[in-house]
Amino acid sequence: MEYSEVKTMLGKMPKAELGFFPTPFYKLGHLSKELGVNLYIKRDDFTGMNLFGGNKVRKLQYLIGDALSQGCEYVFTFGATQSNHAMQTVSVCRRCGLKPVLYLVAIVEPDQEDMRSNLLLDQIMGAEIHIVNMLPGEEEADAEKRSVCMAREHMKRLEAEGHKCYEVPMGGASPIGSVGFIEGFGEMMEQAIQVIGKEPDYIFHATGTGGTMAGLLAGRALLDSQVPVISINVSWKDPGYPGRCGDLANESLKLLGMAPLIDGIRDSRIDPNYYQPGYEIPNEEASKAICLLAKKEGLLIDPVYTGKAFAGMLDYIRTGKVKQGSNVVFLHTGGATALFAEKEILGNLF
Image 1: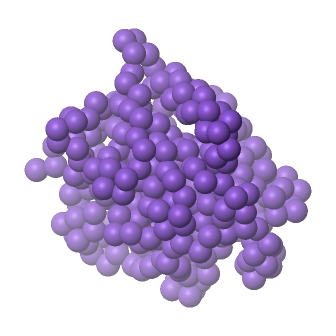
Image 2: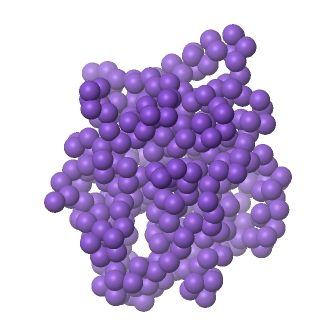
């Protein structure tokens, strides 16, 4: 299928035009020379709509479009206290006249007297924020489930009062949200062909909730692309994660009137070897990757997501998993606001 045909299908879905597209795509000359590959970057940190943009806006265009089409008044979403997704949801809600409500798990407990980074931005934009503190011995996933239950009870109360609410899942990882990265994959391939002259040999990106990866896999299948998409985990995942991401991709395809094309186990290439010691906990290789990109190319990535993914990509190149001379694309999904977060998240960068 041609990308023009995909865009026609996408055009039938409700969509709020929120971002700035296409996002830049260009070669990192200094690092390419040092690493012996042709390294390109797709700047989805420039998606918009504010200075602190990121890739979630691609998903939110369709999610907020759906909310508006249903006449919703409130939008609820979830994440950690420094969630990029939550901040971007607040931003687009303000643009579209919706009321944002956040339920945020304090994996790293914020200082109420010294709010930082995304949590500070959430406050400046006037979001209704509910901090969910983790209980003694509670796992992150259990705290997340508890935050969703709390939010749904809140939504029920508002609905009973006549206020229509819309739930955006963590990371925007839903069939509607992942449609945004079917579109994003096609945009990236168009640019690669213009700049490189053909499809790249590899795409690397960070994966958390799986919504971005699901959209990329669905777009890859629709366009009959052969480029491997290497998804670097930023947190622990159970064995069912690939299958769930495949199901999510197929549900997104279904929204476009397409039959299932994705087998999550067969089609995904998920690497869990670079996120330790855990989500929102920095590691040495990610810190080195952040500093290398900053000093060689003047670009900033973050310790939670893109730093770990970039470190994984560097390891693939340096150990020969990626052949010398290959055309490699790093999908920069944003998140550099974490450089201004709590010390426990930032780690040691200098």
